[in-house]
Image 1: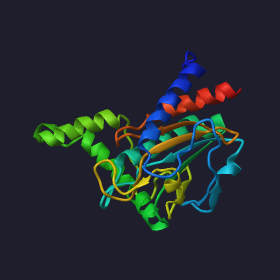
Image 2 (image 1 turned 90 degrees about the horizontal axis):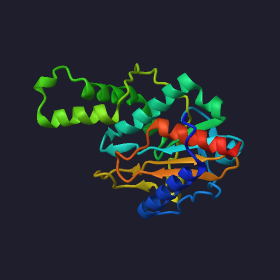
Image 3 (image 1 turned 90 degrees about the vertical axis):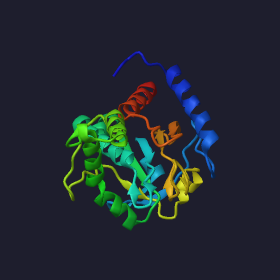
Image 4 (image 1 turned 180 degrees about the horizontal axis):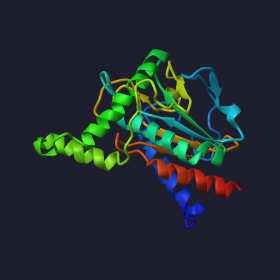
Length: 241
């Protein structure tokens, strides 16, 4: 990690993100940086339930991915984001290193979340096929643009067997969208599609339960790289020590 970053830089970044986020919330009350994160309890896809306040003593990376991006069409960026964190966790032991918990929240029922898991490997395979078509010279202009897009926004290569998708992080089921709605994230129209979804948003909560950072996407491509989030967590933990 680079040591040149300072507390003032993080404060500036957070202030900018908070301003942009407050301008785009649809409903509900946004969580406010430097205030206690609203508590909640949600069931976990992998089993059991999680109460946010019971994670006090740990840093929490709380991710609300978009979910559906259209009718019968899941957001590829969301699957890539989860995969990126899962592989980095395997390689770098992020949770142990930072005393960290990572949570994903989807605004659907158990059956829909199961579909998200079932299609995970296909979603990641789609990305690989976009980046590496069988015959690039035969692509039309639209397909060429998609190839360049995929290479730019999905630089890493992942592949998972069906039924063997790594799920190291709890996937929380917000079936009635109570949490998503209360934070102003849930919507039925965003990013050019009319479908039940969340506006992608990421929160970093410190060990005392106070929200220290949030990133509220302005469009579907507006997602912070995983490495950036790790730097934020590193800096926040360093400042606390």
